[in-house]
Image (cartoon, rainbow, N blue to C red; front, side, top):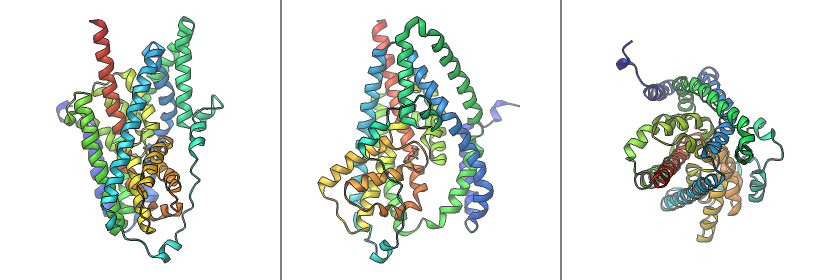
Length: 410
Ligand code: ASP
C-alpha cells in the first residue's frame, strides 16, 4: 500500500478520541452498556500498559544511569531535574490558588444539610514523614511486586550506581540491563500500537458516564482548573521550551500530542510513560536522559495535580464558608507540592493526596465527596500536564548535556 495514504499513529489516536466522544454522547442515556461492554476493552489496554511500567522504570532508569557513565554526571543531572520539578510544581500551586481565589465568589457555600449528608470514606493520606520514609525500600523485590514507584526508583538508582562503581566487574550486569531495556522497549512498541482502540473505549465510557453530571458549580470548578492547566502549559511550559530548550513550542506540542492524548484518556502518568519516552526521543531528547528524567518525573513531578489540589482546596473551603488566610495559602503551596511528589502516577491518586492538603489547613476531608464524582474529568487534564511537564524537563536537560558535550569537545 502507498505509505502516503497511511495515517500515522498520532492521527489514529486522535481519531480514536473523537470517535470515543461521539460514541459516548450516543450512550448518554445508558452508560451501563459502555461500562459493561466497552470499558473492559479500555481496561485491557491500561492493564497492558501497567504491566510494562515496572520493567520500563527499573530497566530504563538503571540503563539511563549506566549510560551516563560516571556517578558525578548522575548527581548533576539528578539535581537539576529535581530543582526544575519542584520549582514548576510550586508555580503550578500558585497559579491554581490565584485563579481559584479570583473566582471564589462564584463558588457558593453549600447548604448545611447537603454537607451533613456527605459521606466520603477518605483513604487515609500519609503524613509528610511517612512519605519520605516510604521512599526507601526495605526489600529488593517488594517495590516491583507492588509497583510502588518511589522505592522502585531508589532501587533502580542504587542498582545503576552499583553497576557503575563496580567498573569492569559490573560489565556483565550492565550488558544484561542494556539488553533487557531494549527488549522491554520493543514490547512497549507493540502495546503502543493498540493505543487508538484503548483511547476510543476509555473516552466512550467517560463521556457516557460523566456527561450529564457536568453541570452548575462543578462545571465551573472544572473550568477554573482547566484554565489553570492551560495557563501553566502556555506560560510555564511555553517559556521553558522556548527559552530553556530553544525549541519552538508549536513543534514541541505537536510532537507531544500522542503522549498528551494517551495521558488524557488513561489518566495515568505511569501508563503514559512508554509513549512519553517515545515522543521525547523523537523530539530530539537524548535517550539516556529521557530514560532517567521521565520515569522520575512520572513519579515525583505532578504540576497538574498541584493545580487541581489548589483549586479543589479553595473550592471545598468555599463550600464550608471558610476563607483561607494568607498563611493557610502558604501551607497549601508547601503541602500541595509535597503531596504531588507523593502522588502515584495512577488514575485518581491525586484525589487521595488531596486529603493531606485539606488536613494541613484544617478543612474537613469529607469535602472531597463534593468533587469526587467528577474527579475523572479533573484527572484527565492534570495527568496531561503532569507528563508534559516531565517532557519539558527532558528536552531541556538533553540540551544542557549536548552543550556540555560540545564544550568539552571544543
Ligand atoms: N492521575 C495522575 C497521574 O497519573 C495523578 C493524579 O491523580 O493526580 O499523573
